[in-house]
Structures are given as structure tokens and as C-alpha cells.
Image (cartoon, rainbow, N blue to C red; front, top):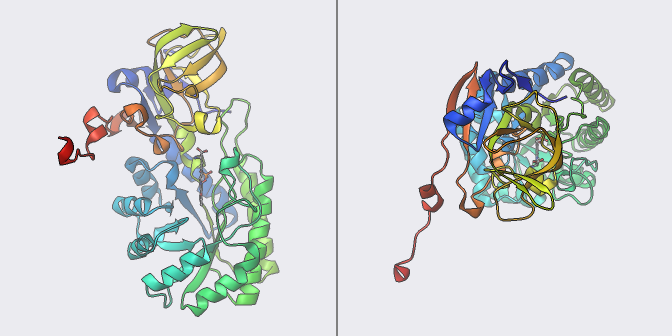
Length: 426
Ligand code: LLP
């Protein structure tokens, strides 16, 4: 159930443009982003939930993709932002998101960073008693609206690294200290009006979300009743998965929204909490399948195994090396060709773990072919690096078949632009 389109030349189509032409014009590796798909993903997600609960907002988790064009597209749709660092807050403000459209959920944040985020007008979602106390010293707490991230004691994710709830998690305040912490915030002068939880990332199974909504609402209900907090919003974080393999299915959004909103409403009633706004923070869902990483095959080697070597590596797309993630890979120049072999698709980094795929069924790939690595829009470019002194990839936005470079490929000069050699070494 992947988002793959093919044109009449049997080439991969991205947003109405030919992937092979894009590779020729702009070079590779290049991340190619489909504007219409981002808008469509956002609107499908927003409509699914607002249909069942009109007081609903999407806070796009921009850590997934902070390309300015992507941010601008979502700004124009009326989306809000989940930011996790001062840099993300800065970028969001620069793009045009007002502070009240930014929820900052940081982890291990310094006093200066807390103050900076507050001065930008973003709403702070506090992750620890330490941050609460330190915030009260660097800003005027009187009447300041804040929220807390709680640990709902439910976690899920496509990999251990991506599970953010439960006893092993570094995130949030403990469920059983919530009442005390909200009371402490009030005593310090704050106006705590929100609660947040986020259980993990890349989740296709609907069950953990239900458990998390129930558990977060039980904590919120207790805080409402025992600490007298009237919630203006409850935020259930992100985590909704997308299919990466052809066998995985897309989440049935309508059903997903109906069930989860149903549970949310039941709990609101049970604890007599009124009608707070419901927030969700999808990152992957909005951008993952709206982008393809185009790479070129430069060498084919028959060793003890057969390796298809390409001009990108884990410095370009880290997910396969870091999480053993599956990314579907197509030969963009012969989309109709039958699978004839099982090969390893290897990057150009000098490490054995630099593989995009093992034993992957592929057609008769030739040197010079352009491959499309799918679902590269989320945690793709944002996790890339200059390892092996490789310049960062270019990014191209496709809108109605028209291409615009939205990030220039780095140059060698960029690799050392911020370094200097001290005088005694000159
Ligand atoms: N909200 C919070 C507080 C988060 O920490 C995250 C993701 C999200 C929302 C968005 O989650 P999403 O809807 O995208 O699943 N680098 C990993 C994913 C790390 C996710 C970190 N937090 C990967 O490539 O799979």
C-alpha cells in the first residue's frame, strides 16, 4: 500500500514530474518533495479528527522535516507546530507561525533555552520538575500558560529507540506525581492548562493509541479533580505510522479517529472536564510518503554477494543503518521491469553498515540507473550529516509537475566554512 506513481514512459512520477528528468537536471542524491501530497496528508488527517471533534488542532512535529518550503506549505494550511528545540522554534517563527501556534516540548533544556522559547511566544510543555523550577526563575511565572508532558506508561514504536512511554523512558513526569506537579506549578504562579503525552513513533497498530488516550485522560482527570486544573487542551502526541513495505496497510484514518475521539469524549464526561481542545502531533504521517530520495547507481559488484552501489549513504538517509528500517526502493527508469534478482543496495560511506537494503528483489539494474528510495520525507534529510566529508544532498519541491530547488546541494567549501586553524598551526 505504497504511494507509487508511474508515468507513460514507465518512469517514477513524483508530483507530476519525471524522476529520471529530475535526477538529470538537478543531480543526485536529491530529496524530491511532492507539495500536493503534503497538503493532502495534512487535510486527510485534520478532517478525519475534526469530523468527530471539531475543536481539534494538528501540531506538525517538524523534527520530521524542517525544510522551509515544507514548513511554509503547512503554515498556509493552518497547521500548528510541535517544536523540540530552540532552533525549531526560531525556524517556525521565521516562517510565519505565531507563538500561539507553537508548542515547545523540549527534553533536558537549559535555562537560556527556556527563556528564549518563552520570549518567542511559544507555549512551553514542561518535561520535568527541574525545568518547571528553573523556568520560574528565568521568566515571570505569573499567569503564564504552560502544560506538562506526562508518561502515560504505555509505549510503542517501530524500534526500541522510538518508544517514549513506560519505565525506561526519559520523557515526561511520572503519572503518579502529576497532581503534585500541577499544584506546584500553581503555587509558583503559573497557569497550567495543558497535558501532553507521546508514546512513540512509527505505530501502525491502533491498540497502543487507545491505551495511551485512556491512561493520559485518567491522569488528566485526576489532576482536574484533585488539583482543580481546567484543561484548555490535551495533546496525545504523534506516532501514527505509514506503510514502508508493500505488505503494510495504511491506517484507516476515519475509524482511527472515530475510536480515539470516542474514548477521549468518554473520559471527558467521566471526569467532568468540559471540552478542551484535542491536539495531535503527527510528523511522519504528514511528510514521509511525500518525498523520494533519488540516487544513482554508480557501480555494480559481484562479490560473495551482489552489491548495487549508489551515490548516497547513511549520511544521506540514516534510518536503514540506525534502525534497520525498510525503505522500498524502485528503479525509477524501468518501473515495469520484472524482478530478476535479490541484491544488496549499498551506499558510499566507508562502513559495512552502510546498506539501504539486503537481499532486495530488484529488476535488472544497470550502472547509471536512477533509484528512488521511497518514504524519505520523514526523518530523512533532518537526520543527515557530513560524515565522510560528504556534502548534504539537495532538495527539490515539485508543484503541479514544476520543480523548484528548495535547498542547494552543499559544496566542499561548506564542509569547512565554520572551522578555523589557530595561528600556531598556520
Ligand atoms: N511529538 C513528540 C513529542 C515526538 O517526540 C515525536 C517524535 C512526534 C510528536 C512525532 O512522531 P511521528 O508522528 O513522526 O511518529 N527518527 C525516528 C523517529 C523519531 C521520533 C521522535 N519523536 C525515525 O526515523 O523513525
